[in-house]
Length: 114
Length: 109
Image 1 (cartoon, rainbow over the protein chains, first blue to last red):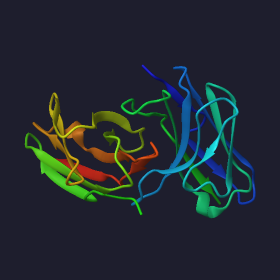
Image 2: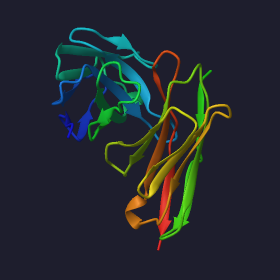
Image 3: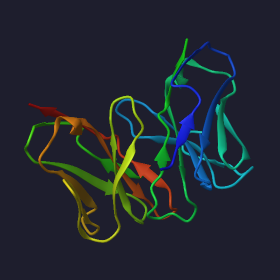
Image 4: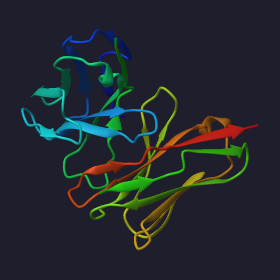
């Protein structure tokens, strides 16, 4: 089974802090994704990566950056956290060229910015 | 713009059948996924449809009509553990995944 592990289930930070969310997958997947999930909204894509050191902006990249130094690890960075970034953050991975291959998700990090 | 519509919440009785609808308007279509997400947990893959028709997988079935921009997830013999949110997601012409907001399904004894 694919395992996607996010470093924290719950995290509380203060406005203006730099926040790092880590994600590791163990199935040698090329694609990795960061989403945020808010009540009443669908999953919204922040950034994705299809290879080491490659990154692409998703629908809502403002206020975020990412890092993919190794294939198995994809980090999301909040450069200067703000209260409107309080949300559930989900990491996912999938095989490249994957029309019918699903994305596999981590358990999520519930981030609160005070 | 791109849009996926699902009912916000549905209620059903244990042992019954429920149908969760999903309608989509996207720039192109390359497949549709259904995921299940229990509260506080990760979404997990249920089904994938790319051709018209019904795909059956145990108690769960998923239907697709590309001409109508419509899919449904059918859950039979409902169990309490089926209480969860069900997410519909469409792959558009750029191979990006567009997500619906999800349908919260409440199962009552």
